[in-house]
Image (tube, rainbow, N blue to C red; front, side, top):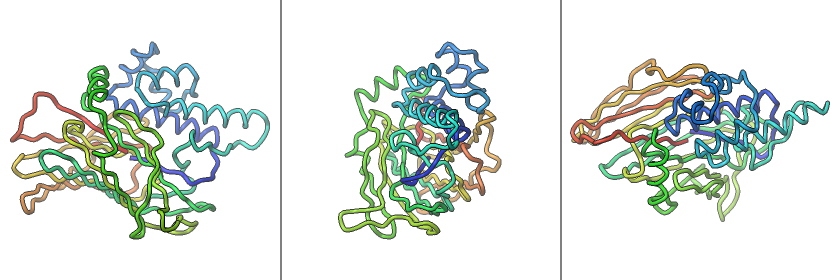
Length: 327
């Protein structure tokens, strides 16, 4: 889902609060927790998580530590809290109400520099493996060249049962070899650098460069990038989610499944102020060459909204629904 930041930029206290709220909501969704359940696990009043995710309550050190621990967020929530604290200190000292983000603390753009003109996500399943192919047209509306782009890959086969899920991925960790991650821009290979490497969660910087040269995204320019990776269905699941973290003009998601599995698809939308509700329009279904394709799109998706498509294979019943999220 996902997303990105230029090498330079600023973040205000208000933006830091918003990004913290979005990070908590993201990981709560990844782990399959309701707001009430997360609050109970952390020892907070159920309304408190809602206030945090809506931005009505400011981040606190205790909440950040506990949320990161219970959601197994790999310090992502904690880093958002550090960014908020840094912005708050600068604001309180009488200086400018903005602070340059540290690279390890602010992996995403604040929204002022990078716009996603078109976001295309496609998931293909061959009966054993899923291949996710992401195409995005990016526009640099800032004043500095953009040299890298952050992506997330996060799997959770047993949401709602963190202990079982953690045990599963400790024994069967997601590996770089099986992901076979590739990325291109302007016909050039993009090299990548791991930011976080966990058993069930990866964050990766896609770099606008390769051994043959550099090709940064300059102010005023737009460019298509594409990346793809593979995950076996033993580590995947039955949902595919897109999280909107940058201003996005158009979003499209496609699921391609074998007709022989008789797949059915439905979807939900979750925002910072509302729980999951049905998608406003249904996925459009078509068939060709033994593949059933489901296509869903929307224009101007809301910031921090999460759109999730779920499915079931009626010709191959499974004993338990499994889930997965990416960014």
